Image 1 (cartoon, rainbow, N blue to C red):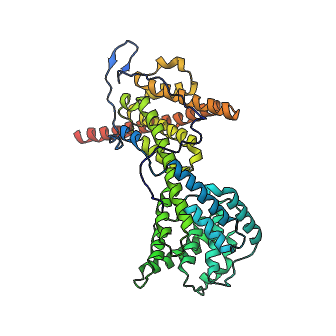
Image 2: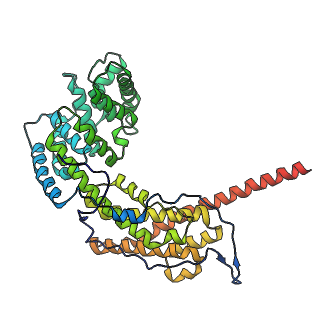
Length: 444
């Protein structure tokens, strides 16, 4: 059996790393945090502080991480197992429920990205067969199968009406619905979270009913099926559709391994792939950590949040597949710049300085860098270089000039921050004015 590893890095070079090279700006050392006035007098300003704690992550430690559980041998083993799992998907003898459960397991084990075409073909076929048929309570497992099918189809963008549950809704409303199939109830509960604003039956009838039934199940002290009880607790804690997929994958690997009908090939494949994907994530993290360190932003602007690891982790929650490493790196850099600029507006900058910075972003002219206060210059220069670099990469590989749109987006963001800060300043002045007036009244 493969060993599942939840730390460390290296190995498995990201597939896009060698295609895209992000340019880093030259270091620009800011020696002062003071504002220069027209008469060249240095004036010390009273600045706010966010009192942010230092990063708990050590840069040298991040660069030293290695992943010995994702070697080249493991990659070869993973590919062999992948062929075996693909043959399971191609097995035409599987029933509708078996197909759905296999797709669901692949999703939750974090390996469905290997079989996107096969999964889409299977779901398309099931969607065509479904047609306009309503749910029929011919067998107990139909509740589980129909709920699972509804959830998977909606997750993959298929148009499925909530009317498929009309029969069960009628039974719930008439208090005639009876079942001992808790797995079916959990599937029904999970399906209810794939509702839209117009799906009133799902979130007004099905969700409250399914939630109540699951709570009764977990509160029943006579329940002896530990595996199903853990599944019920997990669902009540947070539905699958709301969870961060990569974190839930780690939980599900352990849960799946405890199942009595666990597939050895599938669990082995999932463990090895988890380590390989994690290694790709760790390489991404090393890259963005180096970039963040090289910007010197935390040294020159000590009031900003040093949260590069957290910014990267956010991107993993959004898109974890290893082939999208370039996107994760770019998004992390953008997140870090947004956080830094947000702190400048929210905490440190004066209104006059923020107006200058907003104007500079709107004009997008690095030749006017000297017009900015000294502490803002490094931030703008890094923003200018990175955004132009992203635009250059897209133009180079996709033949699309997106720089005007990127400039517009950053200008709109800064204008929004400026409006917020103006409102804050007005609110503070109003509040201070009221306090002053009350003090005068009291003195009288």
